[in-house]
Image 1 (spheres, rainbow, N blue to C red):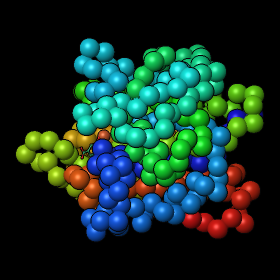
Image 2: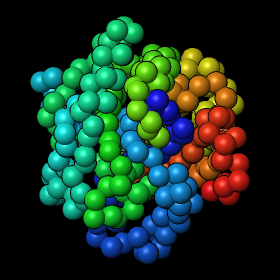
Image 3: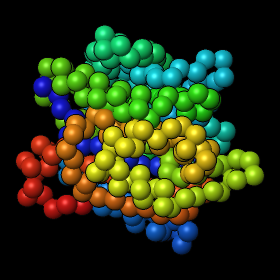
Image 4: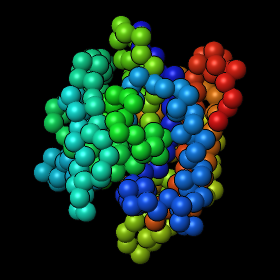
Length: 291
Ligand code: DHB
Ligand code: FE
């Protein structure tokens, strides 16, 4: 059967993609950030998942303000790269997995999570910058990707608790697919940041570190954080962190943290990365050096 073996939490920004695409990763501003992702990239190259479930948000590129689904799953064969205003990133087209994605939708809807089915969609930096950070710059992505887009753009975003429970339902959905697949789930966005208004540039490192600790040790407590707390304490766009709770919910009770990185700044955001293996996977792979 298919199994979620690990989760990756990581920030996303257009500037990270642009730094990679324009050969700026060795510039002093960017060196610490890309250095921090090296162990994560190495971990991914060793683990070699078959499928990635990418929990991310669209930034008014695939969906405009006419229609904003709260939770949407991409069921297409492939997902072209969005032009966010400076040309589409020169990265490979994202290959989907329509049959598996449709199975996830069915399982989730029957589990009373009303998912929007998306059969055609372009993907923006919310999805592509994490792909570049974890998979580098290959000619083709080495993994199929199921995009799960979450509305964190227009009020009201789903609560952290709803997201955590959706993650649990995703675990059930994956495990009822009768094909041996190694699945890694991503939660992207965050960490603390605000990109607009008088508080633009706001970062709260203590909030971020507590959030990373909570993902490892007490996700139930994180799931209780109300939406306004993210906005007030960690900036308007910190609400993106609820997507990390989908990832965490999908991993089951016991996880082993194998990597963590926190860095400020990358344009206007605090960047965080965490890798959590399910306890079962971790036990099986104890021999492998932790990242
Ligand atoms: C920026 C954009 C994002 O979507 C985000 O989550 C963080 C930062 C930016 O434009 O810098
Ligand atoms: Fe974002």
